[in-house]
Image 1 (cartoon, rainbow, N blue to C red):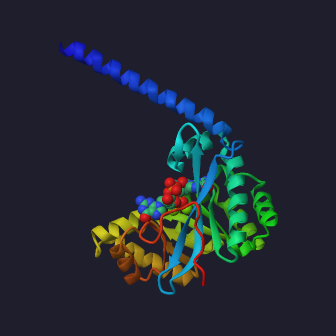
Image 2 (cartoon, protein in one colour):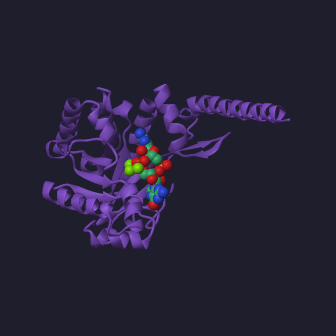
Image 3 (cartoon, rainbow, N blue to C red):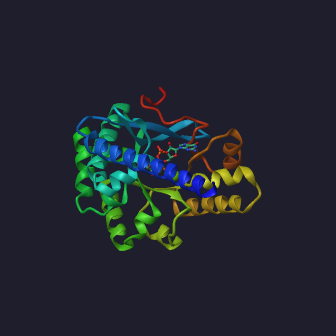
Length: 270
Ligand code: C2E
Ligand code: MG
Ligand code: MG
Ligand code: MG
């Protein structure tokens, strides 16, 4: 009976596996047509200066509204776009759409996430310039978010690319800061505009306010201040987290506590 159950369990597992593989194949096919069908959209989430209560910037977060599969987040489709190389084309669309939106906001900065594949391409500078020119957005109103791992793949090349963005007047933030492997020395040498403290530190802070993560956040505050970098904490979900961060000297915050990413986000009127 045991053997029979095992066989049955295995059979069920196989069916489930097959269904998942099938669903995945369906996703890939649908994703391949998503751009031409106009199924991608951007949701925006503000970063807020808690002292002045001003919106500093809004981050564009990609969503896929699939006719067959419903509204999907990057966790589901980004790996597929990366693998197929489609992220390059979709990424160019994101840049263009985000710049067009920000041009309508009139002054509020927009942040756009870059993938490793986009960053590796020699035409990135041209793609960014085209998005700015096409929308009429001021370069200083565009902020690109890159991760440490993306920078570390080829530090010398990254330094050159970042210098080009700096020369063009475009800002660059280091996203998910503290989770990757990077040399602190690079922070001083790379022309970065700022750092985004990863959500993991914000969560840990609440669990142990006097713990090691608080010490690290405090060090990040000092480091960014001394290096002239902006500092943003991401993933702030509660008032308590916001209070703890503010007590450590973090002034700009982003997270569900302040606003979830939304499709029709508008900067508040002054
Ligand atoms: P990220 O750039 O670090 O963005 C932050 C993620 O955390 C977003 O997830 C956001 O919706 C979510 N988030 C914001 N506030 C909170 C909070 O208080 N609590 C929690 N638990 N989560 C919060 P999302 O939109 O699913 O995006 C995930 C990742 O996908 C992004 O991480 C980014 O790396 C990537 N991504 C999103 N849009 C794009 C894009 O247009 N291009 C590229 N290359 N990557 C993108
Ligand atoms: Mg980001
Ligand atoms: Mg982030
Ligand atoms: Mg993150």
